[in-house]
Length: 196
Image 1 (tube, helix red, strand yellow):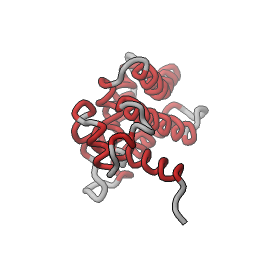
Image 2 (cartoon, helix red, strand yellow):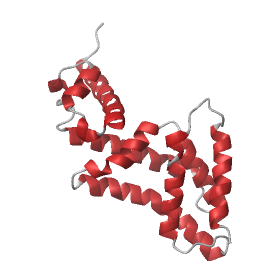
Image 3 (tube, helix red, strand yellow):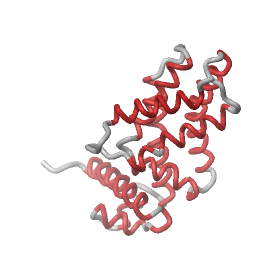
Image 4 (cartoon, one colour):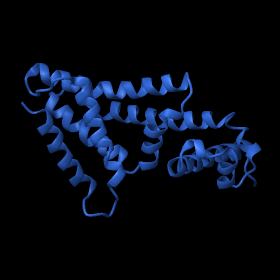
């Protein structure tokens, strides 16, 4: 029995997202055409337009999916009522673990913000800001309790996130360090950066 058209369509859209992600990460959004994405999928360019009206729509879908997954995963794993030190430890571990095997997603989500048109940029930036605010709150609470010494919670949050996200540029599974060991090292570095 053959597959129904809807199932084939969903599979094509999924393969297009995967192909676009890899191509955008390797060559950059601006250098990739819908024809190239279609070629990776093994369909004609017209078939992609049944699922994505424009290349911009495809980029937005990739970024939105990444940010939604990030926010949902964090919401499920953290305890907002625990001590700031515990929450900072949890945030550090979560961020590294979530991003470690998503190098392409991370690269596209951060480097291709410049390629977003309005109002797409505003929508994705709002989601990013929501995640960054989670860490800002932890740092602000820690400063208020005397557990942390920070000059500016926003700047500190951005610096910590940049440091943690940087793991995706060098970490490789099967390398010298396990993800768990990387987490331990970064937990210590982050804690030291805010300790009184």
